[in-house]
Image 1 (cartoon, one colour):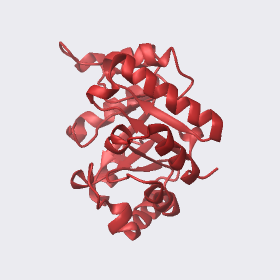
Image 2 (image 1 turned 180 degrees about the vertical axis):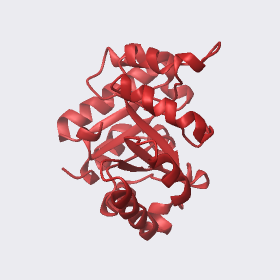
Image 3 (image 1 turned 45 degrees about the vertical axis):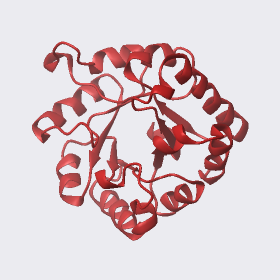
Image 4 (image 1 turned 135 degrees about the vertical axis):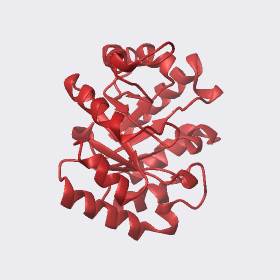
Amino acid sequence: MRRLSPYFLVNFKSYEETAGDDGLAFIETIERVSEATDTRFAVAPQLPDLRWIAERTSLPVVAQAAIPRSDAGMGDATIEAVADAGAAAVFVTHPGLEVGFESVGPRIARCRDLGLESIVWVSDRETARAALSFDPDCLLYERPSDIASDDGMVRTDPERIERFVEFVSDESPRTSVFVGGGVRTAEDVERAFACGVDATGAASAAVEATDREGWLRSIAAAVPD
């Protein structure tokens, strides 16, 4: 995934409109736009569809969540299973999946063992510094209040993103930065990349777009080469 940078991630979360055949149809649209515009997109399908989707797309596939098999119980998705299913990366944590840092290190290490990129959510420098001690591949920088909002950091405080990118570059040059939350338009994408991030993405804005292909094409035009 880092080799893919810069890229734009479309996250399916658990929307009704992104499950099963509907999700595959959406991915086919993303893939068509990606090929037509030579833009790097990635997708995070719903977990039950991950293998099925990975077998049918050339786009990098990100697992929305997974834990080591050694820690798993009934109903858990394991890092080993999503790796076998064809995932390229895993959200080790995200705003809807907060875990203690005592669990983050082993999850990052297991991803590394299996060749998966680890993506760790942080909301500030303090948590970022703690996460960086485990050498993650990517930090997802996002405030929970920005999710699905119209006033995310990319609009209200881009300087904060710039400072965060500089901080990560100083602390761990190999770790990439993904900014999320409140990214809804091509202008938001342009602002994000202008701040120096390696990736950005959206969920609700992508799913809610009346003309998804048109929306994706506008996003593609804003992702740098």
